[in-house]
Length: 334
Image (tube, rainbow, N blue to C red; front, side, top):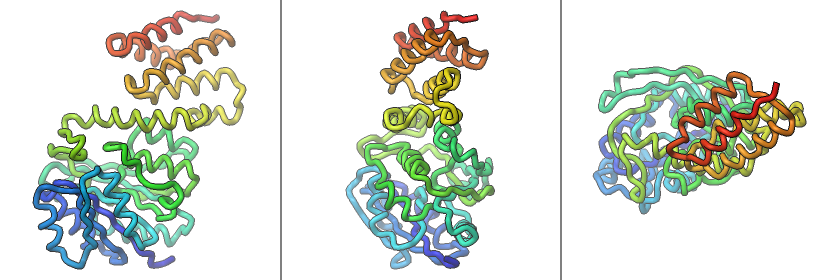
């Protein structure tokens, strides 16, 4: 398809001071084969007034506040394009973003999911990037761990074929943070072909404004804690859904190798966000202890350092975990 149609969704909540720039960055794209859907998620500021000024250049939808995931899910019901770009209301698309994506999808029609590099801007200075990042493509078999371990995929850069959402379903509305990572993991697990555009196509804004929904509103200073809270829900779901080999892909090549099983257990422990998943961590530690004893294994320097770090960081917050790790560290086999 040489001239695909893009559907751009901007979910917004109380960002009247930024959302106009986000909308204008779409309307000013060099590639004009798109529709723009703005979903006002129950804003109590001047969002409705400033958005209505754009008239029929956009599709404007209002709803009661329910969080970003619910706003995007509503926006997806209005989509008529082949490809979907979900743009945050405080970010800015660079003018040639859709043009670059259109060219890439035309070059490889099998691509279904493409993310790109991005730039950071601060506060009101949308014209002055402070940092820039290129997109990187890890080994496809390691994409899930890449998302958990590095978090370098900038969600508002993603453009995905609408069939991805048709296949894997709606965004999880329980998640006030991390709903995009949950979706990308589901799409990756579904086996869609992924591509990248290395250089930036988006400016991601850093600012002090509040985040979240009306039911769970928090300041910029609490983002890390909130990410950990909601990431816990995502990882907990994957812990019980994914086989152990998904956390260490080499295990798939030799599923009975005791050393690879040990490394897979350590890798899964590495991505478990304590204290949210303390029960799952303790379960894996029990499995690790039994496995090491049964096969008379020893930890290499890297594994030993990881376990020591886990023990030290949990002595105050999760003493049961620290005690179990200490017991495992005392197991030595020559």
